Image (cartoon, rainbow, N blue to C red; front, top):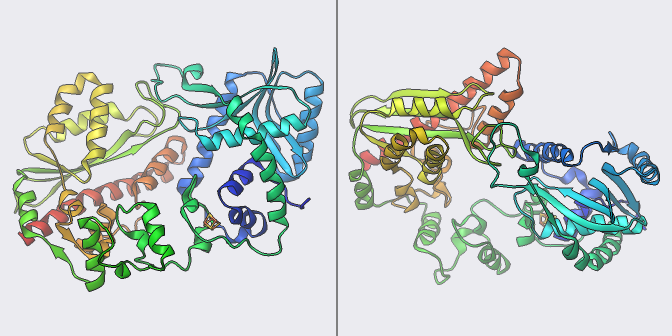
Length: 492
Ligand code: SF4
């Protein structure tokens, strides 16, 4: 048996890729840096796990504070079980090289019930494997397990007043599915033991498994030979097609053969990458410009999507708008005015945001957004959740136009956009003097985390600093839209 233990997450990692398991245990220094977004996901998972404990109140938590206390937790779990304890949180078990912490272990009338808590909104195959891993350890510990369930968030739950924990969570038994893959878990644990004992890193090439079920955190190591402008950057090309090209030795976009089946837009990307040219289809640009009516409101929303609904009339993971920026142009030649709104963190930001948005867009004029699926989706949700504003919000939705169109249709494309038509790819190409690079908050995800931090922040200086950074970021989005439109108008 190797000296390396396999936790549940390490086991899932091994099921995804044995090289990843090996690197995780033997070469953790090669792991990519954890991003702010990933850290937020971990924190979210922990918080949801703690909340779910309230479904089975009065339990004893044996979670070790640090690694060196794991053995202590295992022994404590055993003592509690022997003493007839009915509910244990983070119950610890070890069998051979496998180590498990059961989120919630409950002694029910017929035997033990394992509850695994997930911050996801449904059960998927990886959760079943996860449950089977836990089941295997408890069986080996001699416990009579009568059921294994996944506790996950219920997207149909709409908060009204105090959080209703029993409606927030859905409990789904995976006992039979876990039983069906138990033999696979046992075999794999034996195999992983041998993998971890190897003297060299397993020779596993990159492949679709690098993203399935999770994006691997050793990509910085394994993918370092893949250059910029590789076939993996072809816009909207399916993953299996990208790997088909890669496995044929076609690494660079410019080397994709002319006969290889691609969409028109993908072919434009390949051709532009080869000859370095910019494509501007004036007829299509004009068609887009002719669809707009001044005055124009350039509008951008920022949102936060808490796993556990913070406000009345909201559901798990619902996108809650907390900020907007509007640049306003009366005519093509007039200077742009600017309005902005950023809610105080804490109370529901939506009612005041709606009032400010309606006030600032009261006069006629198209409302120009970048990727209308997002903004229109949020406005529709606001109309649903605040029916007193439904009529006015629907009026604004009817006025929405989408600045993404000329870029999504490749009416305007530069090789530097690298197959993308997001504003983050388009703006630096079209208006190089405007950039997100030096900004403290440089994308929607960072804005979301900054606002989440504001909810618990108490230092007035830090609050002001973060608010300024948020305002600056959102303003750049709409100012960028103003400048992009000016460039398009210059073309026409
Ligand atoms: S990047 Fe891919 S090949 Fe490398 S360890 Fe991760 S999953 Fe395996």
